[in-house]
Length: 445
Image (cartoon, rainbow, N blue to C red; front, side):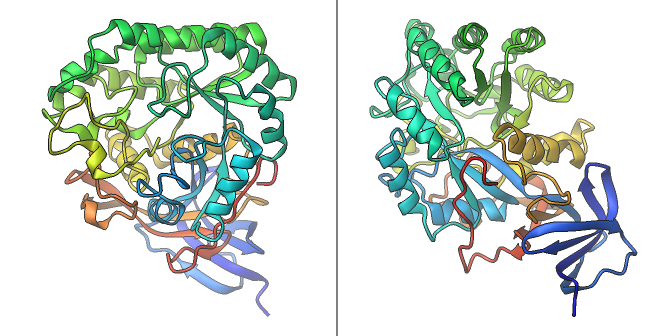
């Protein structure tokens, strides 16, 4: 009788030791042995990877807007998680807004779990929401297993999820610190945005001027001071302004408990190349200039930015106002959940980074920040979540071949390097036929 459920042999496996040849054995959905490649391990199923394939840990994307229930025509659990699996992502954490109701009470969390049940192709966890008036709801959500709480420092774009002002932010942080919860923060300053030119028209430069770097920098400064004062743990979402890196570095050196993410679109695109009317590129904070992009890459390499996640925020084609191309009227959000690994790898290898770096940014570190104790690495005792990746394959993005609900993405027709050939969740190949992902809670994964 075979000793293991699954054995994968690969000349290239990403582990704590780097990229090494290994034989990986799985039992009951967990990695139980990692041995030299020529070790004679027997499994009920044995997979020998090709020389051009690399076994990666399944990616962990902690910033996904699934939008179900309430705005399921924008996205949904079946489509989002199928896209995630096709992109090598085996765990997502769903944001609390854009669904109706937003995940700001325990009741709303239960409604969301009911909507997700039986539809997920990868594991799914949930963030709670922090909005004016729900301070007393946070402990119940925390005890119900959310991974932390999201707030905005500027209007979110949906009326049911208003921002916290600075005084409210400090009160909420002080409360979260009392039971060790994390606040994840969209940091742009409302006053700075109000004083900037209004977003309007077809020119991307005009939209960029409406969300200046200063609005982001100022909000981050306020967030740092609030975290310093309260002692709370904060996570900065989707950093786009490289100007803020120096003060983030200083704050962390002084003991502020702060982690930082950025997103593939800030590392791939540049403002100067966005065509007039190309509203599929609109997001907040915005894609900035080429020199800013290169500074973000340097910050990743230096460890000042911790991780890369998608901020997958889709909508219907009508809301992108593609026929008008008006950046003032279009919904802001990038659809990229299926493409993040290839997009990041395409740019990373041009700058001398390796797959070890990419998996640290896109699997290991997001899992650590979210306190997912058994995900993000290929190690004994971890979930057998894998992506089989062919780094030298190339393809041109065809939106019709993407699994997220609406075929709108700024990556359309862009050539990318690297293809996910298969994805495994707890030792089972994800086929798209059977949604076998689980709903996970903080502390259980």
